[in-house]
Image (tube, rainbow, N blue to C red):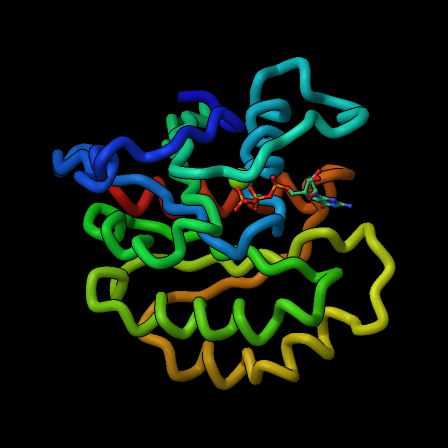
Length: 197
Ligand SMILES: Nc1nc2c(ncn2[C@@H]2O[C@H](COP(=O)(O)OP(=O)(O)OP(=O)(O)O)[C@@H](O)[C@H]2O)c(=O)[nH]1
Ligand SMILES: [Mg+2]
């Protein structure tokens, strides 16, 4: 399934995580509208070869009702599974074969911050994700906001969260719209993929 082709779950069919041990993948999670689908589309653009230079206007996205599986082919193939924000109550059904986790926060929307923080704490305390590498993405830094990302991090006490977490956590500030920080995301994905052997 291509990014952006979110589809509804049919009688919980998608709840069965593809169980093969070979099928380890990167989960992409975050509240509705933070920009997950656009990020995946942009990563595809920049790795497709013709994505050098200006990315241009962002492609349209629709809310993901269900899940999108996308292969990013850079030095090695990386499979990213985005779960729609509206799927929050059943995200945990997909933790099983997750090796790395991208968690996205909307840096232009401080009113959503506490909800995102609760989601993040839930993820970090999940037993099945204890060994996952985590990249927290503050997206939409191209938009003006009355609060800086540093203030947002401080508000949710992110340094304390990182210090107490079992996971190896990295943070990045990006704009999926403008293409800012995408190279760093790809580098991180490649580095965690290498750890898979
Ligand atoms: N300005 C700006 N807009 C963005 C950015 N990233 C995403 N958007 C916009 O935010 C809206 C939602 O983006 P999506 O990628 O559909 O969000 P999502 O996280 O996949 O949402 P769900 O699938 O509902 O969970 C779209 O209009 C995007 O174009 C960004 O970096 N900057
Ligand atoms: Mg989406």
